Length: 172
Image (cartoon, rainbow, N blue to C red; front, side, top):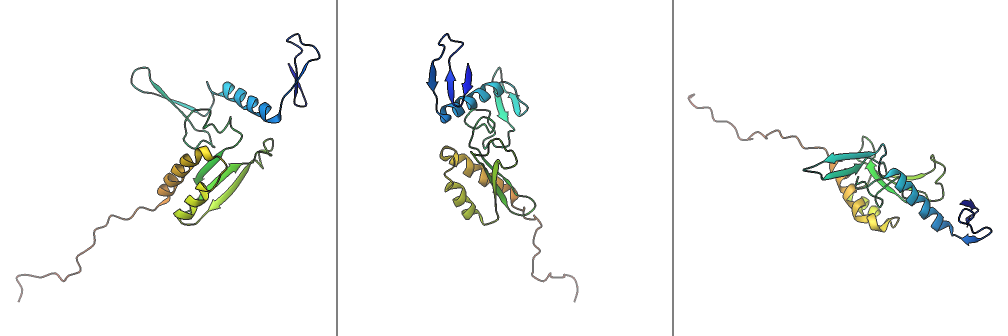
């Protein structure tokens, strides 16, 4: 089978000269499913944990995976549209990055990054109003709240002194 400008020619199947029109979306979908079939059994991001008996859990360390689950829906490698939420650095900021669908072959221009330094309700509104991947809005909000919770500075547990004057007994 050979691909010529979005049209499959069925030469190996015995249909010489027969052409079947295929849209760009169908080709992209097929390519992404092929990538997932190649990557799903073994890749460098796959983490397997064995539980009781023969049950095993599979997690993923992929950079664009919100749930860190090893599945086609959440995969950052096999999906054209991905969302990433990470801590922005030393300050109290959160980085929201989405992939650009038109720049898939240029790695330097693949991600659209936006740094959010506002308070939590504004960041939550920015994440929930982002209609980039509506099926993963709940996961993005959960990741945002976890990252925001991890950025909070813990309060010191030093006990306060009593401000009343101490009574000294035994002196006159």
